[in-house]
Image (tube, rainbow, N blue to C red):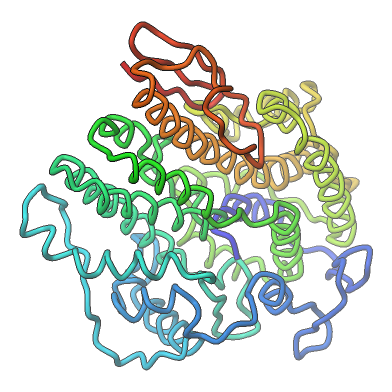
Length: 461
């Protein structure tokens, strides 16, 4: 289901070489229904679908308007996808959205992006339609699959989330062009739409991000134009930020990760099929990891340990939720912007790498127990839960920081209009309490200010 889950694929395959089939029980698969037609394995595709897809008519889903508008371009395959995959994926998605797949596309998203009227004219109508789609109460990408043999991780066309990245890049580019032309109101609509799109598809876009400078929340560009905004525009933007969609509940996200992993374990009787599927989807740097380890596990033991890991991490999330941003990053072993995910791993340094992680005693180094290799078990446990769940949580904290920084910046500009100076503290701004404390430190600097926390910094001269 999740694009972010692709990171686990290499590690699952590395330790796949047989083992007892996964038994359907409360200890192993957690849920015992719905079963696939074979009556032996759980249909996690249906289970996740029921958990995350609201029961609404297809035409109430904002994503439907995007597919209607851009057609097959929404499913343009990435370099690691095969062209014939687009055909069935597009057909199945159209079926789920009550669309005739032969309906011609109305819009296109040309590249490269340029600062000229021709580019704006070419993308304008399509991006305007995206604004309307993203503001609907419901916006989600339905799950699709060809057959029951498809893994949950294969049931979401990752090209769709790459297309969302392209939409967001285009929205940001048009916003900047409009800001430069003093079209403040129209530019802000593009910024707001990019923020909404990211929240709608966060968990699937985490690994689509090219860098830590989010193209979805151009805070610095907005702040640089605030002197041109009218008081009414400032007030409207502050209200708009309060209407952003909520993040998907983190416990629900964690459960989704758990179901995806259990679905993969259920399919490990066919390791060759796993390899064929994953090789075309994994990043190049992970393909070299496939032959590093090949150890036969009893997957029932692995599933039990996985479920224990999920419970442990769920408890950590609950404990972290009420703490400061710094404490959340430290307790959950999250990365700061700019930090690499991990040092390169190969056959030569694998054992040392794993031992270092065990000795560090970081959260959730609970060992998978196979009776064969605690080291490889640690590797799976560490990356499957701590990294994947943590990466989603980390990105949400960073993006939430940017959105809250934008709210502060708008309020600071409003204050400056009234008093011709910035306040000494944030208290006089009169903002309503925010849903989560992002731990911002504010200081007045000469004729401007500095606003920063553990993951974000904004300087206004």
